[in-house]
Image 1 (spheres, helix red, strand yellow):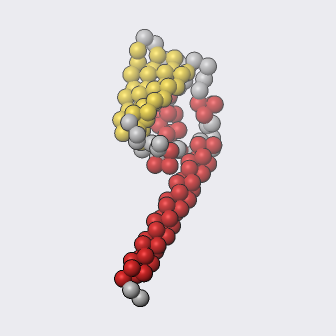
Image 2 (cartoon, one colour; image 1 turned 45 degrees about the vertical axis):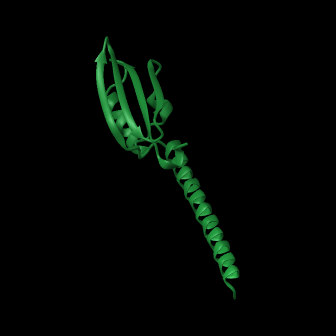
Image 3 (cartoon, one colour; image 1 turned 120 degrees about the vertical axis):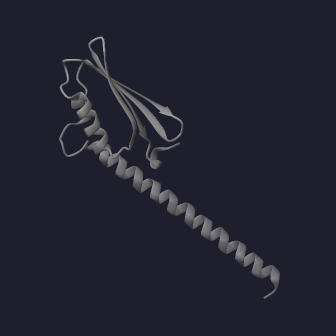
Amino acid sequence: MDKASLLADAAAYIAELRARVARLEYESKQAAAARWDTNSASLGGGGASFQNFLAGDETVEMRMVGRDAAAVRVTTAAGSAPHAPARLMSALRSLELQVQHACVSRVQGATVQDVVVDVPAALQP
């Protein structure tokens, strides 16, 4: 074999390996996204679904903070939802979200919970 054919074979092999790596990364992201969908569909073993978590006077706001974090704000009337912070943390734990920062405050009869969580790699843009 001459040098040109060896180089061509090596380049073809490298291209094949890159394609295989790309395919495996795609399959890994799909599996992680499927796991995420399964977890979010059944919010934990505690039994509370997301619809049960939100009462009529609760609001949830969410926005992305950069590429790998999301800020979540839950506002609840003070007397309507007992143990609202514990319920929110339980929901986040059941979704296996890593909490970077959390703050609970009471403002004019409403409980305001601000949480910054890491966005799983499968859901990052």
